[in-house]
Amino acid sequence: MLDSHVIEAKFNCEVERVTKENEKFIVNTSCGSYEGKNIVIAVGRMGKPNKPSYEIPPSIRHIVNYNLDKCLNGESIMVVGGGDSAVEYACELSISNSVTLSYRGANLTRPNPTNIAMFEKYLSENKIQAKLNVDIENLENEKGKIRVNFNDGSFQDFDRVIYAIGGTTPVDFLKKCSVELDDRGEPVFDENYETKTKGMFIAGDIAFRSGGSIIIALNHGYIE
Ligand SMILES: Cc1cc2nc3c(=O)[nH]c(=O)nc-3n(C[C@H](O)[C@H](O)[C@H](O)COP(=O)(O)OP(=O)(O)OC[C@H]3O[C@@H](n4cnc5c(N)ncnc54)[C@H](O)[C@@H]3O)c2cc1C
Image 1 (cartoon, helix red, strand yellow):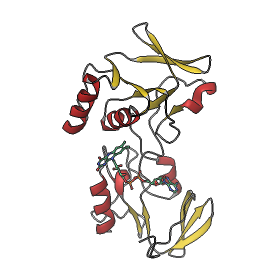
Image 2 (cartoon, helix red, strand yellow):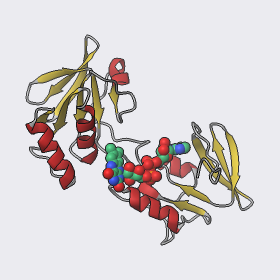
Image 3 (cartoon, protein in one colour):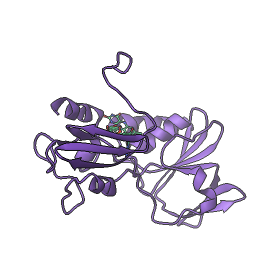
């Protein structure tokens, strides 16, 4: 659809706010402003990833990540989390890195059965290491590496740490688009995914309370 110009896409272009003036929407972005009769907001939740409660020292923030964008090869990496994303990140990264998955629970229970089986296979084949049943106390800069201090007194050093602990609704962004939120900070919409602002719709992960699915996100687009 992109190649045949059915969709006009603007890449590297961040939407800052959407306002409504005289029945028209004005979309203000980092690359200019656009007008629209209807708007579908489908910004997902990963633009606002969950972060740990302890502070990350500024000197190591560039190697503490929330996705795989900055990953290289040949690094020692700790992936933090116990869900599908954490398992998928860890197994994928282990192809060209030395990977440890850290999760506070004794067992992984949240990933789907395929991912649990993949995790166990990689673990039994020593392709990944696991640090289970222990919480992280804090991170420190140890000569340019990340020292991870666990609450059982142990520590390990890594080139990179990746948190895969989910994401939250981009509340501030939705407020700037005049989307009404309920008392839990989730967008309010009807059975057609239309918000209280007529002509403005919600789709994809931000229409879910928890979890997410590519198929459901695509179906939202189809319904709208
Ligand atoms: C590691 C991982 C594995 C997954 N595996 C599966 C799987 O196997 N099967 C499955 O069904 N689902 C899977 N999911 C979930 C799936 O990716 C999501 O449910 C789906 O991508 C949601 O689509 P979306 O369009 O709502 O949001 P997203 O895919 O997150 O897209 C949102 C887009 O909006 C952009 N954006 C955000 N803010 C702005 C802004 N202000 N201006 C402009 N653009 C903005 C973002 O850059 C992004 O490109 C997985 C997720 C992860 C993280």
